[in-house]
Length: 277
Image (cartoon, rainbow, N blue to C red; front, side, top):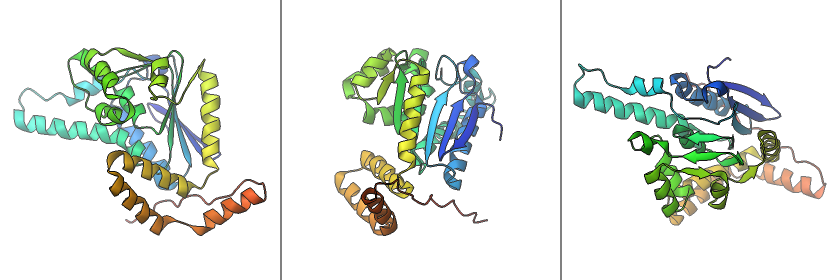
């Protein structure tokens, strides 16, 4: 299928989703917000990959939301204020779901970032499982420079990814978070000299994940995200309930046998969702 904002390929159980509007700084036009959840949802529902790698063409990862998307959110002059603002709230929640789908997917998402990653671009990478960047990458909560509060996912996620003081500094000043400091604060996993080197390592990491039990990977992603947002007591209960239903002796037996026999383990894919209607 052809998309306006993305190219998609799947090989060796790895789905590579690439922002393809590099000449336009990969700004997020209205089509972007429809296409991303559609792509992620299809890969997840069909269990067509075990890992997702997200990258971007061009000098910069993304300059954030395009002005056309902002314009689409503006109410008409003759619309009643309360109803127009209520609709705006629903529109913002829809934008948020375009990134939340990355967290809710059963499949880990690795993102490779070069150059500018600002505004909604930062929202996007915050929703991914692991972040990698080139030495020239930088991150900016750009909304404050435009006179608005970031609203598509920056603060709910960044409060879990950055210390309080540095986050507030970035939020209040609109300064750049350079790659080196981002690595120092633990926001990115690793920094690379150039895009090719970064993609080689990210793809190698994806291959390492792809050979693990996809059910165990799904469970691990579920538990990490759940524990981030809940108490230890709630998280312990959740993992116990998960294991009671999802623990599979077949995968464990295969994993142990592969180690003893010094071979690669072979695990079944996840099942695709059934079409109920």
